[in-house]
Image 1: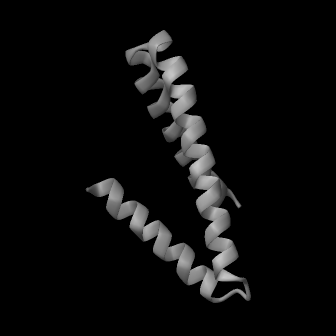
Image 2: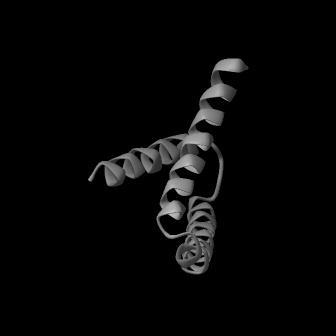
Length: 80
């Protein structure tokens, strides 16, 4: 539930931001949808390959990657 709420907030923020830009909303939504489809599919394919090789360590590695991405975003906002 928390993930769904956070994703919805993120989508709303993008929608509000796009409202201020002069962009074709249909083309933009299609591009975002296609990128999401491709990246999700690739992630599932890679996960099916790497998951059995790494086992439980795959979950830990995924968590470390997400924490690293979050830390990098925070660092870039606060550092400059």
